[in-house]
Image (tube, rainbow, N blue to C red; front, top):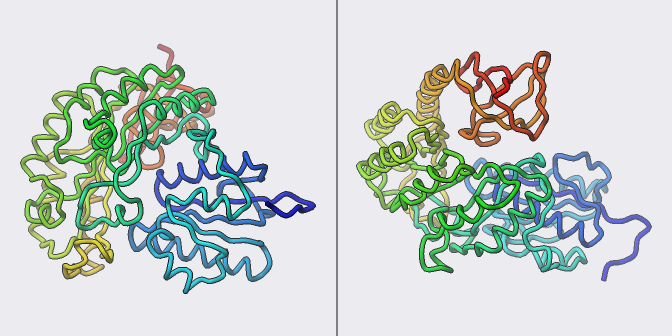
Length: 439
């Protein structure tokens, strides 16, 4: 039972890392709010918050460093009396809890990724089962991420996510649809389905891949206008997902499918369970089944023993396939992964150079593809107003990571969260410019 105070506790939740962490924070915030806490996210001004919860990322070295530095900053704030309590949760805490407790004892308690009830109990709050599927959004009110499963059963040699998130566990179709209805009722128009591995959805609870069935159910949710797919594994990719994307008007013609590499030796070392030829055949199939699809992918450079020739093969592959969107990561040598037994013999300087080359290659491709959009009209949803522009996105672009559409506010008007048709009049490598037109 909580001690009575003259003023209610105010909690600020600091979220680091990916969209899956953001969803976890949104759920935590709603539970706290239902327990009569004042609670804000990190986008809010919370100088008077007396309790800080840091939701950490432990994916790669850079993310771990950011998480540790954030914890240290708030530990110092606690020592100086600026806050009363400091709690840490999330992936870094799941993976390194014992080390963190020793190294940063100023933190009042550490919790793993699946310990929400324990964290609430520590705060004197009850875990309210009736709130499952409800949350306080940290995104703009017109879009939200919707997590359809937790964990991962894949065995990629470089990846520590199963160490932090556990094995794959699907949420039921009924629960996901109900959550989508809750979001729509609160004004959400675009949902982005996220998981460590979308195509594995349903295998554990339905004994079959059920993503297409889920999409058909979500298509019927009134108020949801766009459904976007993130993080699909290419090996044994179920082509019925592409047919569903083609046939259902609410499903964006957009697929985020991390390929990581294309050289067969590196793919084998990565334990990706796919070859270059199979990867190429999948790309051809995607573009044949959904002719206007936007393919987003990510690649990993500097994997142990990656040669210049193997890296050049990757560059040539990107030039050949002209992906609509590409992200690049540098290999991070993670303990307790299978790749940790390999010698991390590609220097940091070489990793950075290769990442720069690959992104410069993609930048030119993106410029060429965007130039082809000039004179065309696209449907866009508008996210914000900034610097004299209303800024939106097409169905081919996800928030924060992809292209944006800018229309001048002095000669156009767009309501934030609404759709409009935009005639593209100019383009750069990652931005489109245009004017709103009536259809």
